[in-house]
Length: 627
Image (cartoon, rainbow, N blue to C red):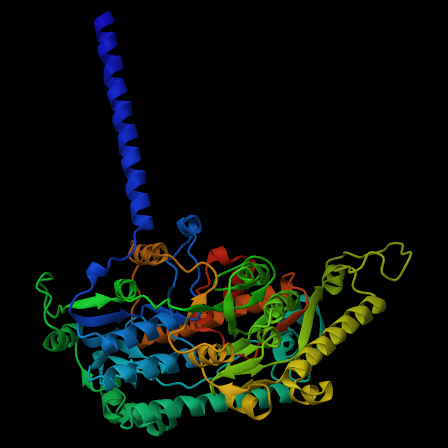
């Protein structure tokens, strides 16, 4: 027995050692995978393949692996516009790349400015003598805007191209709040500040409707001009003017209707499309499947083609997403986080600073925190340029007032100079179920704000006065930067939203241009020569781990989504549910005074959000209302 015991303890020890060894190997392998970077060796002669299964954004959000473990579905793929433009431009000059392929099968969209920039980069590839091909089962407005710049547009024979144009429905909750006896106390300045109207009305005010019609009309004209110029054969007027007749003439075959309307060039399966690319880029001998072609994907291509880093640094700080208090982001503009990045950059020898804004605004306090941090750079005597992307409105424009010169595109949405706050009270709700309030006050402010008993007139007057003072601060900041009087700014403010072309005419924007033009201006003001500077993006850039996690989770057993026209329309319905959730959160959340543009179209990332149970009570209520 004594010998058997020794043998048993030896076996247990061996087992424990093996378990420990296996655990160490597992965590070593996990660490190696999470810290791995795409290898430049993965670059192959053939096609550059851009699989855009998600949205195009200004700044990609970070992935939290632990939160993803608890998530009910995979995160939406995100692709930075500047990465796609750089990939296309470098492919145009690289002899190894014979063609460029854009896989838009699961493309969810992007902002009009970003799509224009990428379309122009596609044009440069074609100008270099290289074909650009796209493939999808369903093209919507954003996908069609990219595909218009391709030399060959392919569509699945069972697919469709649906051009809807900007605009749509906005949900209003005044009737619901009346039924629940909730008082939405609104404090605002600006006849056009429509951000609070969903809580006080059952439809648009005349001012808000006028503003929306002008804004969407301008964006629609820009979209049509871009697509028709890139693809003259596309009969956009027929497609959008009488789509029912177009489909009827094709006997209900949506793909044939798109082909006849000049929206696409060829109908074919994915295999047939692949065989076409094989003729251009060569076959992938290792795949062994029909239609497999030699290709390099985005991440290894970017790794093999880094941006040059010679000369002086010009800092680029990104303000993307809703502006909020605290450390949120990237992908959301946390005021404290961005201000800290700017303050840390004060120690660097930056020749200039470019502020890239893609935000509809948000917290007034956070917007001011960012503006003050930008002003500290300006106080050092370096030039500060503001580069507006898709949206730079309300709090996004507040931030811009710290710059020397503002660049925007005709499709940029800006303005919305106004402030509001919403505070719900429940005195009528409580009374309807038998709850009343009583107490003793030593001053009119005692016990205020009382969300159950209601607000006193004195508190309401103080809160409204605070909003009006914030609006005057907003006007004065704009007036100083734009060399106007506050009265002149007020006439073009009042919460009104402007397209970039009109904003330039009325003095809110200095000149047309994107990030490259803003960088070139800043370099010129800093007296730097070509090749004597390079941009450096402040903050941590998304790691390759993010892309790996997105890829793993997108194929981790979740039921795959269809990519046909019905799926396309269903995704739009999910976007409406997500917006309802955000609206209700704006009413019930503790957000403080807001400089936020509700009239601005939702960003591509926001449109792609799915409303899930993890989104909280507001999302569940949105689902209930929608059903």
